[in-house]
Image (cartoon, rainbow, N blue to C red; front, side, top):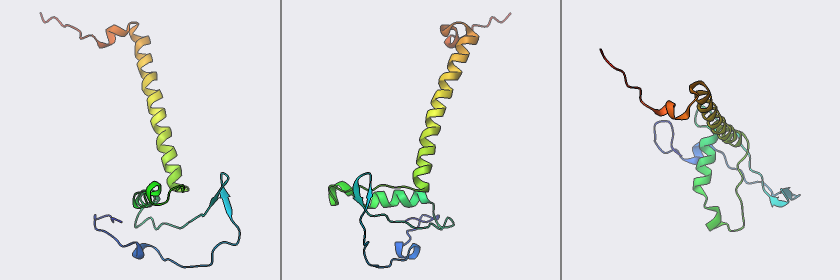
Length: 120
């Protein structure tokens, strides 16, 4: 994983891996059997969004694990939702500004015509 300087950092320097007994109960997510992996991110080293992007790029779920799904949640999911909502709001604002200009100008064509100025 690249660090702030662009140098690659080994995953073992960022995380500790422990082998523990498997779950006694099977958990489900939207009706499918699921395994949940969670962790904390040291924000002085990286961000949750960068970690989730690195995980998604590392695994080719469709090719290597057919029938499986990788669902990212938590702070990375919230950041993506916020960004998508921001894009929608910006689009609505642009349309609103356009219609406001039409109302002020009373004519759509006049908004895009160049005005000729006569110099005396």
